[in-house]
Image 1: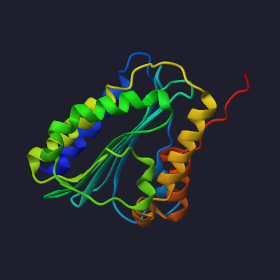
Image 2: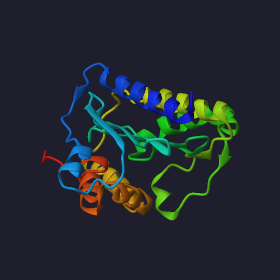
Image 3: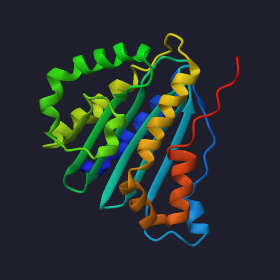
Length: 234
């Protein structure tokens, strides 16, 4: 089985896991590929699936599969906690070509101080496995939104690639209902994270090359990293 096939299977498994979390509700999402085709901006053959769920702990858990068949495939997953839940932001991305994986990125990113112990426990637990995941990658400046112990590697081989996939799935299971926190502080933290992610122009360029700039911008603003909902007054 090729790395591209393994990655697609991993995305489907992660989406199934997300939808099967107790209390999870699948949120309706537009078919972005069909929209690009209808508007005449679909420039390349692509496979594209987006699953978004809401759970008792997470206001938004997005699992995405995006691929140019035979060339490249991307797993993207991101989870934002409800604004009153003291949890980190989960981010998981894996990029693979036909013969090799080029990146595996995984983090529980800081939000409010009450979430810091979970981040520390997660990072301590993976420390013995970090070296086996691949060669460390240098991250751009906008990634200051991540924790200092973010995983950012180029998997060395198929074993490292699979280890990264397994770790990403296991990390998602850390996000259980937590202690309460200040919604305004959580909203501010999530807004900072979204602002940082939107500065990643590489994502926009890849999408725009396949579906056109307008739909790429709409997807980023409405599905990939939509704005944080307003905090209700007490």
